[in-house]
Length: 308
Ligand code: PSU
Ligand code: MN
Image 1 (cartoon, rainbow, N blue to C red):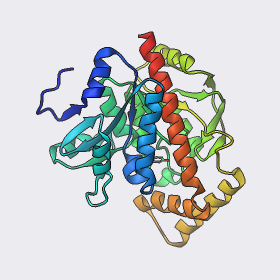
Image 2: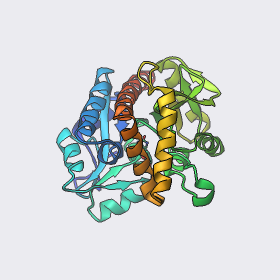
Image 3: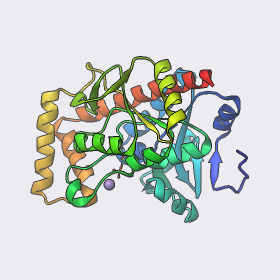
């Protein structure tokens, strides 16, 4: 794709070269950096993810909206600028990207926003920590992340450690089923619970190495236009103690209820109560799993490039 200099989409030179040469490329989101993790760990995680992708021989493409451009391949300095608390960047799902560009806003892209832009640029693999999903009170609020419907219309493979346990995990899996998005377990048939290795929900499919995942994704694309979720659990040695996880969850829900927190404030409140209750251990788990997912995505992108 030829993008003129005044195009609303900017692809970095490194990513453009990788596209031209058919190298493996991994898209990385910025919402997790700007809104999902505390400073200064957020910037460390962003850098570690890029490094993990490079170590697998692929090229990272960190995505966001900066100075009125949708950028595929933000530099380290640009990610820092996006995460600067002095310049609040808005959270951009797929539907928001165009308006953010038109109104010259800075924005961090969610999984949905990131895969939408990745696909436009010609990138088919993305890594993140947790996919958005169906919220527990969704039968009343209709709160379901646009990550799910976006994945249903965007042929990108997303590597994630399932969805956070503050969400309704069985309902999220049901929605992925309805939407025709396959869920493939990496070396497991137990759907991961983000902080914990096993959410208790089963999956139907597994692959045990990057080449098998790449083969599965390529075959899927012959028969379907949806994306795919690769569920890569946090290592057993790195997970949050499942018993502590259960107690932290109960605590976080009680804090939200006691304080009458509702709507968009619920998720941040739950996560901060969770982090406080686990003395920061939940944030460390979050860091470790995101970097592991970036590494696996790098390996898969490499395998896809080799089979092209
Ligand atoms: N899950 C996490 N950490 C995150 C997110 C999800 O464990 O930071 C972010 C991702 O960017 C995801 C987004 O795409 O939240 C989903 O937000 P919403 O539910 O508003 O669609
Ligand atoms: Mn929502």
